[in-house]
Length: 475
Image (cartoon, rainbow, N blue to C red; front, side, top):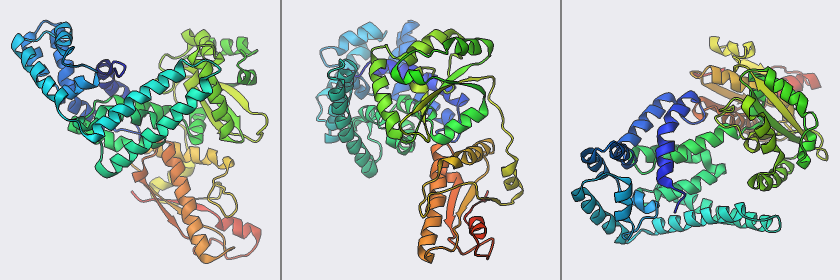
C-alpha cells in the first residue's frame, strides 16, 4: 500500500549507517549519533523484522520466530496487510513455527480491530493522499500536468501544516499514532526538514520509526545546495566550466564533444549544474518544466548524464548523480537572460587554506567589511557569498570551534534602530552559515549598533570602517 515500506526499511535502515559515516558533518549527524541510532534500530521492531527475515532465509525457524514475536503489528498495518492476508503473507515470507504464526495472527487481528486514534486515522488518510497526488502528477500528460501539480501542492500545504502543528504540541507521533505515515509527509516537507531532524532522532531511539525518513532528509539537505554551498563546492574541487544555455530550452548542448573530452580525461569526475538568474522564481519555473520532462524521461539533463554516465563518479558529490537533482540556483545580474553552466569537477576534495580565519585559533578576533548588506536592511548582498563560503569552509575544517558573530553599524540613523539592525545582520549571517551546514549551537550573535566604532571620524571612509562584522572565538 505504501510503496513497499518494509522493503524500504530493510534497505535504508541498514545501508544508511555506512553512507552517513562517510558524509558526517554539522549538517545532520555525528559519527557517534549514527552508531547510537543504528544500534537502536537493531533493537527495535524494525531490527527484529530484519533479523527474522534473515533467519527465515537461513532456514532457522526457532530464531526467526523468536525475533518476529517482537515485531509490532502496526508495522504490518502500514504495509497494508489485513486479517484476510496476514496468514498467507507470513507463510510466504517467513519461516515461523506453527505456534508462533498462530499467536502472531491473533495479536495482529487484535491491533487491526482496535479503535485507532484520531491522529493515526488523519495521518493514514494524508499519507495515502500524498502517494495518490504524486502518482497523478507523475502520470499526467502535458495538458493536465499543471493542474495535477497544483493539486499536489494544495494537498501538501494541508498535510505539512497538520504534522508541523501536531509535533509542536506532542512531539513525534508513536507507532500507534501513525509515526510511519508521518514520516512520508515529513520527507516531502523540505522547508521544515531541519526542524524534524531532532524529532526523528528521538523517535528512532524510542523505536517508533526506522532510519528511512532521516536518511532521505539527510540526503536532501546534502544536495539542496544554498548559494554558499555552491561557492564551497566550486572552491573544493578543481573544475572546468562549460556554458550550456541551450539546455534551458531542452536542447542538447552544442559543445558536448568538448565536455565529453574533459570528462574522459579526468579522474573522479562529478557534474554540477548552476542556473544563474536575478530572481529565484525563474529557476523554480524552469525546474517545474524540467520536472515534467524528467517524468517522461525526455529531459536533456537525463540524456546528458546518461551519455556521460560511464565516466562519472558513481556516487556523485553527495551520494547521487542524476542531472535533475544536481542543478542548483545562484543569483545573477541579468533577469531576462538566465544562464546555465555545467561544471566538470574532478580529483579529490581539497583542504582549502584559509589563513584569514586562523586568527581565531589564537583567540584573536576577525574583523571584516567584506560582508555587504542592502542599505538599512539585513539582506546580504551577493558579492558577500565568497567571503561567507570561506568562513563556512573554515568552520567545517575546525569543528571544535564555536564563534560569536557581532554586528556593527555606523552612526547614521537612530540608536535603537541601529541596535536592532546590527543584531538582525548578525542573525542573517548565522542563518546563512546554518543553511550551509554549520551547527547552530556553534554560533551566537550580538548587535552593538554604533556603540563600538573603530573610527570616530565622520567621513564616508570612517563610516565604512565602522560598518563591519566581527567574529570572536568563544570555545
